[in-house]
Picture: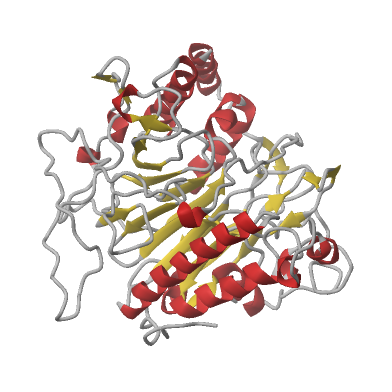
Amino acid sequence: MLEEIQSNKRKQVEGGDLGESCEQVKRTKLVPIGEAAAEAAAWEKADQVKIEKDDPIGKEMSGQMKAETHDPMSNKTAAQVKAEKHDPISNETTNQVKTEKHDPPSASPPLVCAAEGKEKIGATTLKASESAQPGETREEEVKTIVTWNMNSITVRYKNRDKWNSFMNFFNRINADVLCFQEVRLPALNLFDVKNAKDGKRDRGRVKNTDQKSQVDFEIMDAILKEDFRNYNAYFSLANIKYSGQLVLIKKSIPVKSIRYNLSFDTDPSEHHQEGRVIIAEFSKFFLLSTYTPNNGFDTVKFERRRLFDEQLKEFVSVLRNKKKHLVWTGDLNIAPEDIDLSHPAEFRRIKKGNVRKEFIGHPGCTDFERKNFKAILSAGDLIDSYRHLARLRGKEGEPGKGGPRKGAANINDNIYTWRCHFLMGRSCNNAMRIDHFIVSRGFMPNVQSVEIHGYSVFHRNFYGSDHCPVILHLRGGEATEEVGEEAPQQVD
């Protein structure tokens, strides 16, 4: 099947059949006052996909086993030097050990077939040896970042029309960094342990130890060799086809460090057990990509979300105290205000069972989640960049269009990043803005625009997912403001 897909793709390329139709797309591109806001785009075929997302992971995260400590940056080429364990936060105080000079971090190693015990031919796109080294003249800055919850990267790839439309968009944007959430790829079993839910995993590699996983493995190999051959790939994956992230960074962009957890007291190579955290350190800022756990409707998931939010708050507080700028992106599973809901009255009254008032509401808009999100922003002196720019332009929202009153917004508006197909067992077209770019207050002058790419009840520019891509454009140059004062120890 893979050979047929690749053959069809080559024919499409040769025949020039990868473009979208010529109809004009309405897109929200928020820019500071005085800059152009309109941009041409292309229609994607109307194809509403019925997706019912589930959350099979129901165990309490407070008792979650730590992922086995390992170095996913193995199998380096002879020219590469194994990086020593270090603290990526530089400029430490006098009572802290200064970090040693280190080489840029390796990307995920070449795709390796565990069953055959040999490297896949041609999988060189994953080798970090091709990335830019310090001092090289081809060094570039990060200017464009895209985030997208794909809801399974292999499912997206198998739908050739949708994938070609996405690649057409990708080639126009020419992003420096892509952050993909919910890639739904299982991590590689170590020691060829098959069908085991426990045991050691290499969360930086895709599983290929059985026939079923080999299909997804080969699809990923094709994607990374053909579509993203100029990017280094960083995976963080769960045990099963659930959750997981992939961050792609141009090989010409220097990366100072990579971390897969939110604690600076933990080995950077130790992954979150569900692959929910990838952190890249660049010269001017840290990039944090998260697939934040859904709050769900039961106490186990409430506690899981609370613990994750607590870790986030501590992480952003540390960065703030060290005067490091942050860009936090991904599927954050939070609609910060009613203006971020298409049907606020309906979303806010949903509940299952007898729960406290703070837990009433659809996951993503409960008082519990909003309170914790505000605490994170306060601890890190962070700003919701999209909402900030919207308010600068006087588009804060109106009653009946996502505002606090009971009226519903126009679902066709391109101001939401997620559109549901089913809500509490019935069909709907409700929408939320839950995919974000949250940035340090002092870094906001570098933000040129934030663009929500998708819109309409027909999921224009969603490319088969229930989320659409969101794009951050940076101006470049140094940040013009200092990071805020030291964060308080406790934020209520």
